[in-house]
Length: 233
Ligand code: ADP
Ligand code: MG
View 1 (cartoon, rainbow, N blue to C red):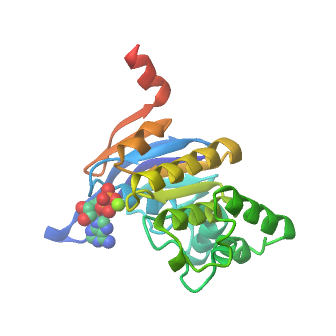
View 2: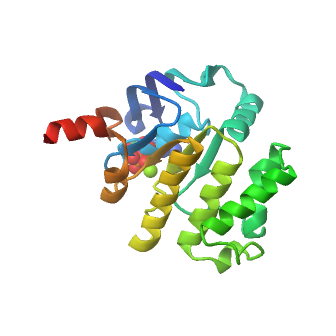
């Protein structure tokens, strides 16, 4: 579970000061599929980076599975990231000099959890998402959508509890965006991964079970799909 209370992140000083996240409080339960929506500059990436331990808050608290992130030193924070967080970014998710398969097992290798079963599972999942004949290819030989699918497989096979995806469909055409979205949904349904996706893509927002809308760094609304349905009926 992710528990965020009074989280604030400020960049810069004086006239350059930007409050990228302001007094954000949220609880995200295990297995949820949450979309962070909001216009460009509303603080989505900042919040994902704080949840993922890529950055530290200015004030407030954020705890993930009972670990208070602000209390961690740099080494412990990087261990936290390796063990708990799978990242998917808009682009450049894969190491260009490694094959698709090597990329997919990279986090497992860092975790020293690359067992035979883990290798087999990764191959099977890559196969399931249509990358079975691309295992030995380099990322540059893949389309953007194929690269995103490989990055998602890496994020979920490494046994991390939480997949953080920052606008994962933003640079894809709609067919590839749909398949990436479907894969995230499947990983949420079948693997029980907690998935937090930032997006301003209407299709991603429509597929979410919960939408947290940010405006100017503030939580503007927080709506679950069940409530959306109730409002319609
Ligand atoms: P979004 O992902 O919703 O577009 P961001 O979290 O990237 O929003 O940015 C929120 C605000 O914080 C913006 O005004 C942005 O310019 C500012 N910001 C983000 N990162 C930095 C940084 N490293 N230094 C200074 N300002 C930043
Ligand atoms: Mg962003």
